[in-house]
Length: 442
Image (cartoon, rainbow, N blue to C red; front, side, top):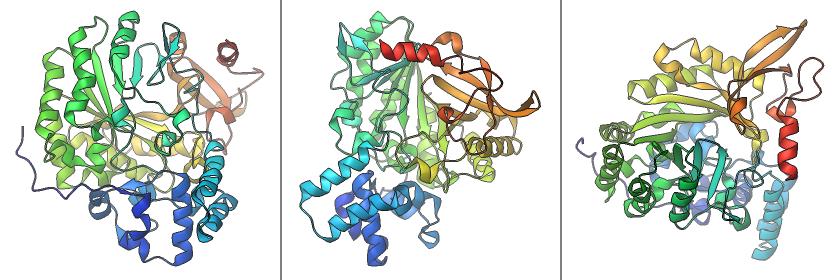
């Protein structure tokens, strides 16, 4: 392992309670502060000093991409909704009245898209396992209860309901024994993705209690443990100077020593996240354990909707030894209208970025929608029967037989999600729609 970085800043999360006291926010006009506070009541807010001091360029605010990525903006909600909450805050209304208004808005933001609750939650002996999801045959997602927060919250996050107190919509598991038993009964599962939130907010001792049972069980099908995290971007000291950073890296090494593959699924939204000395050292330390870092992020308006940004991002990832993995389309949840990029523009951005980089950077797949039927990539725009069409392909599917299948949709320059597309030609519906209807009726 490499020597650790210089002493880290004190880790002190800054949450909604401290929002107005952030010096840069306190300096804003009162009406703007009130609007931002209103949005922060509805959508989750949390940052730390590293994000504030090392990543945000305060001279470019409000247009700075990392500021847009981490701070609520009035345009993220409907004007009328912002006004309702702002008026209640201005009037110092009772907490219960404010909460009721906030909850009404939150539940109208499609809090769990793509069948996360209705189709993805598995069962064991007739009981729903609300701390797990099993959408694709080979991969199970596990949500450890202690990992259901983050070092900082992304404003686009499709899992925002995990962080706003909607307990009936939250995924969380207290023990890993059920996970092990479920995997025993499903030997086709090769990958477990430990996710959240961010599992790397957990102390290493707690993370061990999730990973070590998987290693000890010696499940014949399980070959890969994935950890979904933004810690490399938002708190790289987790891998360098945190009190248990060395133990975390030892845990990574133990996974490899057991003959299993460990993949850090790193959310990497902008090249600036990879430029600090702390981030560079953290990436080197992780790679020294034998773990592979795979980088993914959605295409987000105001943050990274520029082919130059993606080309620079992929080059930086490859230079540091990470693997460009996915460019996702922003999901149809939360402040989607504020962030969404139409599919036609997403295809153009992806293609322009790919043409600027070498083959090592072209491992990235996209633009991909994690939609109800599966991961659907938009390969491009083609002509069929004298009309423009989107060429689509299933990268992953609820039914494994769908994987790799190509299909066409009518070109629509405004469409930003799979549900907004229509089949090309005379087809009444896409091939997967009837199957999904039948599945939902069960």
